[in-house]
Structures are given as structure tokens and as C-alpha cells.
Amino acid sequence: KQEVTQIPAALSVPEGENLVLNCSFTDSAIYNLQWFRQDPGKGLTSLLLIQSSQREQTSGRLNASLDKSSGRSTLYIAASQPGDSATYLCAALSYNTDKLIFGTGTRLQVFP
Amino acid sequence: DTGVSQDPRHKITKRGQNVTFRCDPISEHNRLYWYRQTLGQGPEFLTYFQNEAQLEKSRLLSDRFSAERPKGSFSTLEIQRTEQGDSAMYLCASSLEGRQETQYFGPGTRLLVL
Image 1 (spheres, rainbow over the protein chains, first blue to last red):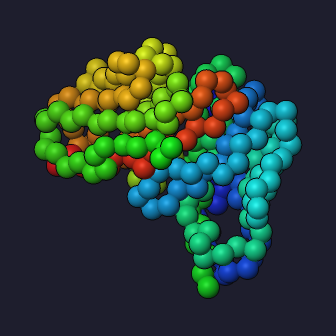
Image 2 (image 1 turned 30 degrees about the vertical axis):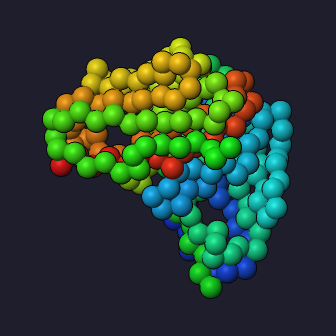
């Protein structure tokens, strides 16, 4: 059974810092891994999707990497801004199912 | 296209009442998913449809829950005899067919059972 864990649960950083959010999964037989952003009381916005054959994906200041062998993915945010404050969720899609398994998220606060 | 929409956005009900939520997916998406999210947790899968066929249901979906997608377009999620433990955010997502496709989420319906 796939389990997804995110560390840290919360993070508070000053504006301008580069930061790394971590995601671990127990079953390495994943089809893809997605990173989402969720603002308080809102739905999820897809940030990056990494297929199992890929090692990383980039979008603007965001870079996500995937290491299936170690069961880990990281989301790197460069030059953080207060507008980046949100909860970041990772979700794994395994080969034997069509449902996403989510971690509990990292709540990020970037202060000016 | 305006994305995935959900209605209502908020619902307060008394224990024992029935509630129904609606989800309208992105028009060309033939897959539709329902998730439930409680405070401080990630979303948990409930069920999904491909067109009008319900292909997978979670064990979380007790007999009090039923979901439909009668014409392969919008979907409804009904909870009968609500309990306080049903209080959560109910999220809908849609995607094109294919595992490589991104799921696009709606804003959610927040349910509070008193």
C-alpha cells in the first residue's frame, strides 16, 4: 500500500530564500508524481507533474526532482516570495491504480 | 473554459440530514474524481468515473455515500444521514483519459455537520 510523507510539516522563511520541500513514498512502482499548491480554504492547483521516466521538471522558479529508487521527490523554490505562501502537497500515482495518494502537505509561509 | 466548478461552495447541515454536491468538470475531460480532505490532511480518494462508468470506489465510501455521473458530464455526490465525521472539504477533479494526464481540481465544497 502506497504511503506518502512530507517533511517538514511547516516552514517559515524570509523572502528571497531558496528552499526545498521533501516528499517520500513507500512504493517505488509509481507512474508519476505531482506537486500541488493549495491556498487556505481553496482547491488544488497543479504545479508540476513528473513522469516515472523523468528525473525532473521545471516551471519558472519551481523545480521538482524524482528519485524512484530512493522513494523521494523534492520541490525546489528559488527566490521565495510572500505570494508563495500556501500549502504544498505531493501526490503519487501508482501503476496498479488510477487514484492519487497524497501526502499531508508542507505549510509554507514566506514573510517580507 | 472556466475550469472545474463545484456547487455549493459551503454547506452547513444538521446531523441526519441528506446533502448533495455537484461537480462540473472541464468540458472535454472524460475522467472525474472525488476526494475528501479533512483539516490538516491531504485529500483522500473517494471514487472516480470514466465517462458515466464508476470505475473505482474507496473503502472510505460507506453505504451512506453515492456518486453518479449519469450522462458522462457533471457528477453528483450524495451523503445520506450525515454524521459529524462527514465534516470535510469535498474536492472534485477532472482529467483527460490516460495516466499521464494532470488532474485539475475544483474549489471544493466545505461541509459542516452540526
